[in-house]
Length: 420
Image 1: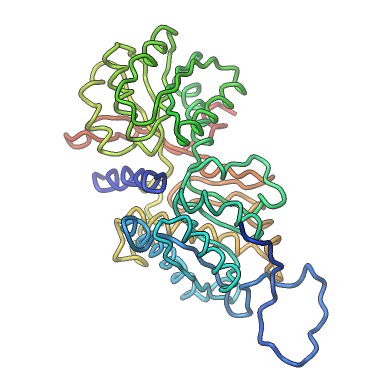
Image 2: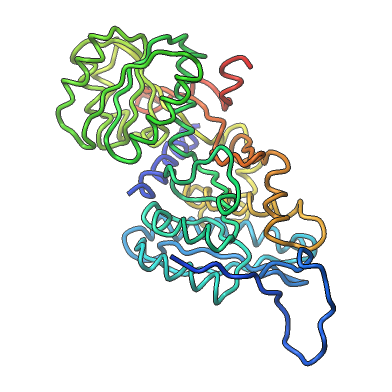
């Protein structure tokens, strides 16, 4: 159990690592050039690029050298392990999956060049596991212009969120938590679990804090819940003024919309000013570093809760399959996220009937929710692009006499939390 809890906590680091214009092209029908006259088919029956009778080509760029290689290498290994499992079982509808990869070194310029190579030269059918905030941020509009499906992003940036994706936006299929969605879930937890009616929010002025707050604000407005918000600088060492404002507002619950560099400062100041109201924060902060930093200050005053997006205990069969096919990475959380990316791509492909086109593949992903092998379901219906929509809850406490995160509640959606 201790090992699993440590692995769950380490998943937060995936996001913290990740947090740190192309021309539209008509898909070509693959095949061997010849002199024979091709059989005429309706345009919508032409297969997308990268689709052959016996294989389908997908790819990504990720940092597999340099400072982020310890994340990128196992991440891609997880994708490749999942595809190997599928291929050795015969592929999907008779097609094996061929995975192309380019090392972008976490560099947005190299990432843009890699995307062009993958789509225009390698003719991939889809991106699987688009990696890292800098590269995703620099290429997201290019991906949309190409019209290519992109499944799983190793980041939670707000540009991925859409509650009704249409046209060029439709090909974006995030899986990992998006901060705007997580902010909404924080409010649902505050109201559903803690009966909060007036919520204090301290958020940072970086993208993570602003995106979290955007979700908080939207959900609070929908539910008619009062919020009192204060912004602080990311990495601030003095947040006393913001905490004093929250204290004077007499809130009954607090949301810490800040990631690892700032959240300990916020929590410690809340404790110092005796703002003894429970606090919830993002899954990015559910790590031993944070629990060790705040456990003594909050002891006997209030609890600090954090969200999570996987449940390895309840999905032991998936964990066993992962360990079998990725034995060198059996306890590596980055490889697990790659495995999840491969799973989501394949689940969509299995649903496509007849000729495989980009539109049919997108229809297939939207046709019914998809189960995360290590977590809850994700629903893309109606153009919803919100990433993970079910999250669990843990709190700072002692795990085998050491500071850690103690499980409190399993994966739940906003509707289930609110009794809908």
